Length: 212
Image (cartoon, rainbow, N blue to C red; front, side, top):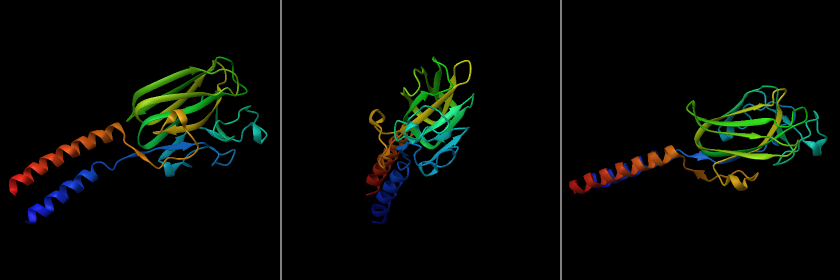
């Protein structure tokens, strides 16, 4: 009788433990950071950390401090990046897909390119490069494939200056909003864990039946 009660509970517990690792969907709109601040760990509650010089700017509707000529796409604030700075964003949990909006700003040239690279454990999994158009003409760039880091670069042969806004991951990125999702989204590795847990559960159930 003891085996009948303990074994099913153990199997159920193991199944839960191997399937609770989820990547939380989220949105970063930069309006929550005071203007003029470099973004670092202000989004640590979402498991996100920035490295490199990405400075929050307040946008055209707030007087355009710094003369960037940009208005953010999810609120007026955006993150401004200039010169040849490499900006990296890392995630504590694996992200299935990610989008962000970008536009070149005052001080850049027509034909400026922007590249968004996605990495998982140091290996490149996806990369998208676009040619940016007029100042304040924003383009949404998307990467997929399971990632824990993105790298942002730009090049126009002179002085790349651009903004990013509305970083959105693991939800319907085609209709990303400023409302952070609290619904956990499984990643590719999570599905593998779930499959493994299911196989373990089936094996345990078979053993249990033989002991009855």
